[in-house]
Image (cartoon, rainbow over all chains, first blue to last red; front, side, top):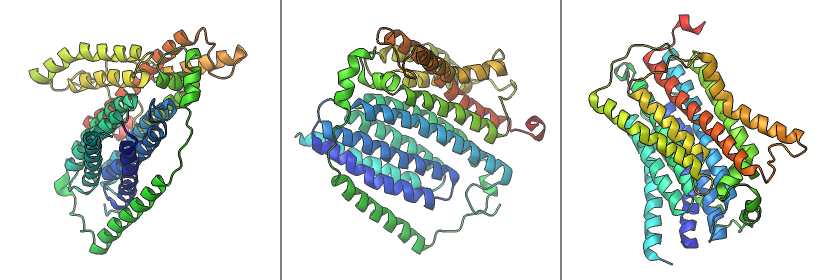
Length: 102
Length: 320
């Protein structure tokens, strides 16, 4: 695989990060905020792997790979916790986002 | 340079971006969740294209599979009383322009920064040099469970803390008492029954494979956790013999086992979690087994806890 292809994925990380960051603030519903935060995280992982692949060409660098695998598990743990909080808020107050009238 | 490959990567990148934007702008909740799952699968394909099969497996299994199940389960909760919620006010035109403008500006600036990033040396050479002493033949497993095993230990700790957080935020410690539930239809029950042995086989195979190829504790743990989730969906609730103390032991096991291994290394005069090269192989396998057990069980508990909470909500009496 050529270096140009890795550039494509490295560049994809930029708009993906922007979409995720704006989504975290602009989306109203908790569920959508969680999805936006996951997209934000995915863009960081994407950049890490794509840059490592770009700089090495042959033979991927195992260190960023291991970091990203660790990161994916941590991101899902955080998302599961956020989901529990959102569901509890919904059940207790009937609110599905911040600043809503119950 | 292969134009077909570059064209494929370009299309895949556009698809990923499109799915991400649509997941956040689509109306309602069902569409965003389904689009997000599609986004995760497209990402897994991108990992595979970048020759990161370990990451692709983790993304497809945990990032998309498990979180997708949790999101779909929440869908039922949030949309149950949709008719009662008042309609949300429309976003003003200025706010939409501001959101789109910020996104474009941020994307442009970051893209420029990424292009200007200098090439880095990386640690591939250092990792390859020490691979022989690590006890395994797959560089990613060597980094995860030997060179940077401290990170992996703390990551299992994060899973443990997350489960703890779930217990706190959910409003009920522990699991719902076994309740009589409707038996699943023959199709679902039969599918779960015939899939289960295969899922267990794949999980154990992935664990073993981590020594030489893409696989290992996380991927195996997720597959085993998925087996539990299938069982739960198939109508088999939390088994009666899983007493609360046993649940806690299983949740703690991976973390505690790695701590013990690390401490024994300290007492033997080595660094924390430093394996002697002659024992590295068997030690890594033991640590992986313990980690797989705890990871799989924790992920299963993530789902089961939230699923039970939706079916049998925590009441004031059970909170005490």
